[in-house]
Amino acid sequence: MKKYIFPLFIFIAIYVNAQTDSRAGFRPPFDFPLYLSGNFGELRANHFHGGLDFKTQGATGKRVLALGDGYVSRIRVTHGSGHVLEINYDNGLTVIQRHDQGFVGEIARRVKKLQYEQESWEVDITPEPHEYPVKAGQHLSWSGNMGYSFGPHLHLEFRETESRDYVDPLPFFKTRIKDTTAPKVQGFMLFPQIGEGVVNSASTPQVFSTTNKDTIRAWGVIGAGIKAYDYMDGTQNRYGVYSTMLIVDGEEVFQSTVDKFSSYEDRMINSWTHGQYMKSFIDPGNTLRMLKASNDNRGLITINEERDYHFLYILKDVYGNTTRFNFVVKGKKDVIPPSLPKNKYYFAWNTMNYLYEPGMALVVPQKMLYKDVHLNYTAHIDSNAIAYVHQLNDERIPLHGYSDLRIGVRNMLVADTSKYYIARVTDKGKLVSVGGTFEDGYVKTRIRELATYTVAVDTVAPKVEPVAKKNWAKNGKIIYKITEEETGIKSYRGTIDGKYALFYLRITTDQLICDLDPDIVKKGGTHTLELKVVDNCGNETVLSSEF
Image 1 (spheres, rainbow, N blue to C red):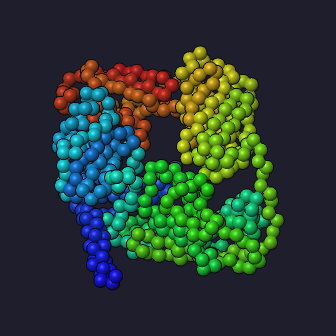
Image 2: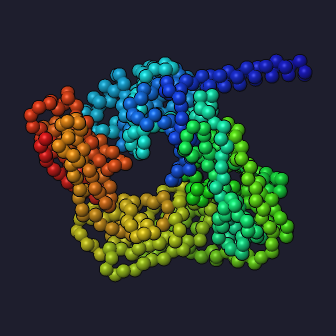
């Protein structure tokens, strides 16, 4: 048997090296030094950051270059991401670049033509594989600051072409980005499990600073969590942490490695995190592959002896820079309050759940919750209101997907039923639209969090105001400020001298912008502009102006 081991080892080594060399063959997207403003897997609202954000020297209009050989698989222009290009590379990865301000060459001409044909800023093209081949270093687009972007940068997103899983791009650029700085811990939490444990005689989660000098007492079943950020050389930015490991009394109980996730797993960030704290235990409905419990209780720790329990966190970045942080929990017998009774407001994570109350119905499908919950449901009843205010729970509970909610309309303030919508009520009493349609006395919509909801009416048209109109001709740019307080903008359309004008919505500033095209709008003379803006309840503003 031994004579077969060496050749097999050589074959495996050659195969692995070939795979590594092929993928490591990516060149950088720019011809200047690389610095990051955001890394893979950073904690964001309801999602992980799916790629790397490359700084572009504080400016837009930088040449974005192909990383290797492949072909363009998709071309899009969207309000959320600006000009988006997807490249299928020969090594099995698809790279998506977002927030560009424009394409180059034939792709740019094709997009512009389609925008005018469809009379829409947003377009989506799926070319044939042979239409737009690319070579390493080829100029693809111009970097920008479009869509949900708060500074010039290039977002690069790596997907496995076959599975469409997100993968961390940083290993492909390790030799081009310097990092000798380890992650830093900012605090930690302990989570007594309801009906099973207490921390400092409390059943609620407890926050501790890194300099905590007080004795921490616990009894029963608890979980831990940590707040930490990574840092890199040459920047002031902070990043998400690549790897965490929790060791208790010398035994590993949990680890996380932020290197790969799927679109289905994206919202599981709401289960793994508590604010900016990363939990070191796994909820029963959380199947996020980046998390691994090394004990038999999902990473939870049982404190059942009156002694010191030694907790050690080991945090690492992609480069191996390491931070060790430890603290002690003293086991101390204590009274553990019982959990709440399983009444009609108890929802189990692995079953279909219903909540019916006068004027309200909620259906939560199986596995939309990550763990069992006791709902603190209440209704605020005002006989003069459009509808009751329904508090599904006093604290927001994110759902993995959509659930159906309907709320009855008690007072028809307006006859036009298209003006009614369901709104989430924030802690400060602000109404945030979650849409909805009126049917048989109810407004129906789909929600992705258990919070507080009611019905509202939107009869106010969007406010549309010109910005620095005297500079339009000089700057070659028409700008309007849009103010829409309730349901948001559904559509808009502009014409100049009766011909379609290509406006786009700048989401971060609530502006409608039209870059004047000299091929469409000839210089000189007076031009007539007409603009129509419609919100999601059908209220519209139409205006006409000359420039």
